[in-house]
Length: 521
Image (cartoon, rainbow, N blue to C red; front, side, top):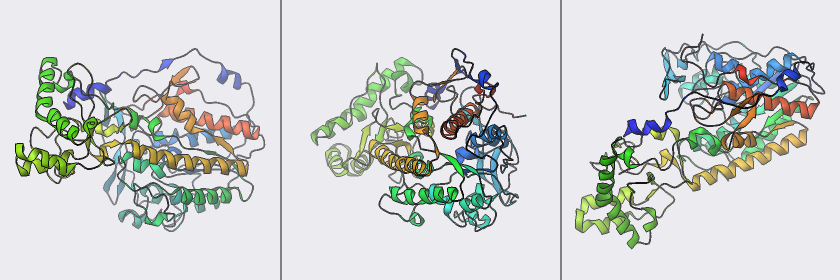
């Protein structure tokens, strides 16, 4: 089962070429100028995107290819100064804390899917490196983390109170990211922050709390959605402080999570007869009949009696079938199902059926199956991840087929809407701050939407968000690829040129690969 489902992601590394354009060549003859901006001291604030996080990790080559670093290179031609980045120690990725590995090495494409590169990390968090650093992008940072004292405490990393990436280069154990930016007296800044204020909730499948209405981030959990009012207050203070001495800059809004490959690669209906039969169509068709007789038929009949027959339909031997999932937003029919199955199955087994299927339904196109869930489908639940405190017996031991995928595996419509509402609110704040302070503005929401709905034509390439082959995203399904970061840098340059009358040159995207190789030389 697992092997067959992996076939859904087998692809070749190809970028679709379009008719070439001469924009880059034409710009080569135009001198780069700063216009009304001053790039002498550029400081970048943000999260993993600013840091150059890619393929699930931070490594030297990825950091060098960050949109912030690429942008700094464009600034040099227009009077920009040195841009210092807190580089990792290797191209393996991962982190050590006191010699113990605390973050994974980077991924590469091994021909069938993502795999971890060989080697052991050498980037030690406790060996603080000396700045100051212009690139203050911190993987994992939320808006409020940029103003939180101690977020870079080395000792705080051990207790989960501090960020290991920031701890490597913070100016002190009590400093804040915004303080480390302001002490450099920047003349120009980029600020792209807020994605993680909803992303943790999204990547956990909605296992978190929507904190809307609670403006105290100190009470939040790691996977919670930040209150839009708290976000607005923090974001406004960041922009106010950054512009207080006349610095100009560019800010960016936030994309919807459903435009990222992490949330749109695994289909909601991958269960064909061939897949269910492990590649054997006849076996799969027989399996469909057995599943309908033993599980789907009785469930459909019982749920129909309770007015919830639309939750489950019989499987088809000729069409693609949806995954079986748990939807915690549904009324829990556990007691009713237990009563319905008691006579036939006995009280203990009936109670188990009730507990497992009380909020079960088949997935629809409105659900988002998370990228890691692809490797879970068809596997056996354990006592730890079953949601019922025990490992289910056969034949109820196949995730997504005979046992519902759990909350952590899928985003359901109510959760997707919570994320969208918060994202929309954050974006209103970001655009208002840009307008109020006369800052350049990058609509990354529109860019990511375009990448996921047909592609983005630039420099003779069509870049899309298609996992592995689209060229826009790395193998973690969230962060950009080398070419994706170059595209983002160009969009920032465009916004700066339009706002400040600069003539920054565009980057030739053909110079960037769509994925990093296993070995980076």
